[in-house]
Image (cartoon, rainbow, N blue to C red; front, side, top):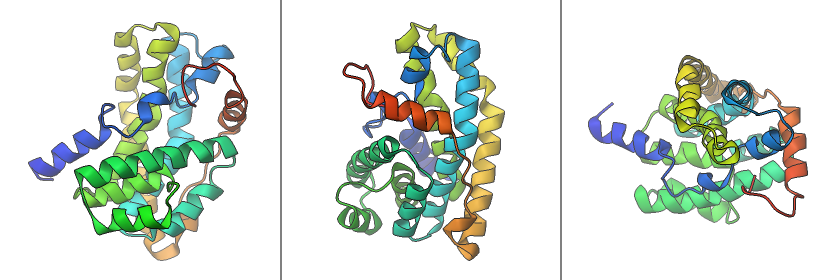
Length: 227
């Protein structure tokens, strides 16, 4: 990987990249309200569960899009792997915002075509993969970005929701690093297999509690995060 491409990966994974992720807790707000996240230890368990379920799905979709699979077919695969209507809406909203940021940062015909085909937004992991390709990144790079975000989003939100010591939240992510490596590698391998077998070969682990909590959270009249 060249220095320029490495910098692109850092930029894409940076929480300050204007893709809208800062407004979402990755399900942490509901988990805090339910008492499932109370401290650094329970946050670690939540992040681990999210990483190995929705994180793996997102990482595989992103890697497949970077590898060159049809993004519209992958968008349908993402729909099938997201049973919660609330989470489907969130994913497309984030995808639309990421598309805007990506087209400014790395203009590419593939991003323009996806924006035209999905004016209300394609699913965020699919857009992430197309963006990674436009930035010159590999499928494994895209998988890393998606896997990392799946754990970093709730960890960052927990600092605000619980006034959790940011050093402890960062330590949670640091200790999850080997598992993030493993999930990214598994996602990239699945994306390679999907090149010949199609999107059905991509992983589809479920997280029913995240789906149920997302539907409930969407009805809250007052909330700190959009999801």
